[in-house]
Image (cartoon, rainbow, N blue to C red; front, top):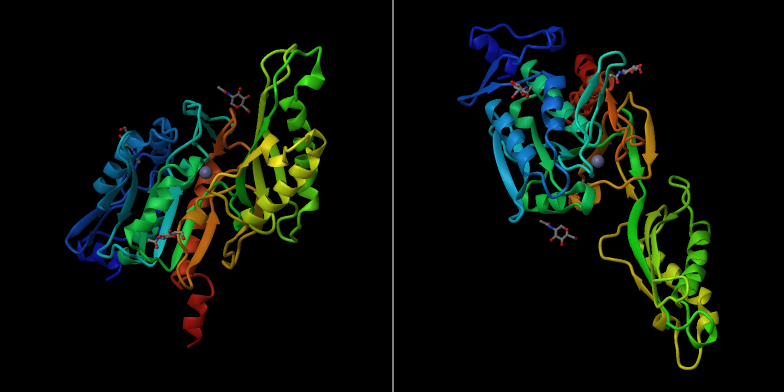
Length: 413
Ligand SMILES: *[C@@H]1O[C@H](CO)[C@@H](O)[C@H](O)[C@H]1NC(C)=O
Ligand SMILES: *[C@@H]1O[C@H](CO)[C@@H](O)[C@H](O)[C@H]1NC(C)=O
Ligand SMILES: *[C@@H]1O[C@H](CO)[C@@H](O)[C@H](O)[C@H]1NC(C)=O
Ligand SMILES: [Zn+2]
């Protein structure tokens, strides 16, 4: 039975359009599913406000997770808290409205944010919401929930069609999404929410970390030939890194790989030859794999520092390279839903951490722009939030074979 039919069975009239409800209306009406009553909210702005007001900097997601789980439970969803870390306690929130836990479509976004916390603030004049997480990523969280709620209440999807997965730790290595692989679900489609300006993203660059540590020999600055300046070694190494992006293979889709020299530290005082110096670098990979980048970067850096070698020394003795373990190459994403602009982006997401199963479709879509995410001016236009509800609905319907075009095909038969 469709949700609209349940409503009729319950003596309630199905809602023709949820958007005509006044903003204070908390519930879309009750829907009975297998003996369970759903009491779905469509109060998008209030839901988004409630989420954004709770500080949830990566590592501190417990409070927002508890709130979200309670909210979904009170709406009638079955909710599972998946522990990701014991101390401090952090968990993913996995929820489904019907009888089917492993539903064909999963909508997913992250509930952690970057620091520092910025309080929620609404500017009526330009209908803009400010605050940490307003765009990255609580706009997606709220829009995904309301999109599903409206589809359910209008009977456009069955409760067994969808589930919701809200994860911790996206901003710092994807611990939540990597843990989500243990949920044992195999959705046919996963819709990931991140700020994409309401466009569908057909792929994003890969990423990896790189730490360069130069090792010197300290001494008096008046006798530099007795020592070896780690700062000088590092500067030479970094000169090679700066030009490396343009020398690596390029991609038609993503352009060139880039190296951001995010943090440099070295030496102790002006009159002391520096003994150590380090640089932390974020690489955005346009083509190839982390392994390939590692090979080229190592070769270029070792060549760049060879003037400093003497005696038995080898390049690896004066410059250490650490590439960490969590890199990945560029990620291609599906973008075949009609009616959307399609773009590529340069930021990383949780997508590579959720194991792809055979024939699985993945979409990336959400309200607001990445250009204000992580900034002191993080904000989201209310209109964009509402548009995203429609956008998610289009993608869900398409994924279920109920989207535009499918309808007509049925009529033709
Ligand atoms: C938001 O929080 C307020 C205060 O707890 C509550 O009354 C309201 O129902 C919540 N609304 C939504 C949509 O979460
Ligand atoms: C709200 O936005 C308007 C238009 O951008 C601006 O002039 C005003 O100062 C803002 N108000 C507050 C309280 O920030
Ligand atoms: C997911 O993929 C990772 C990396 O390939 C692998 O180690 C892990 O076992 C996979 N998990 C599941 C549940 O398939
Ligand atoms: Zn994000």
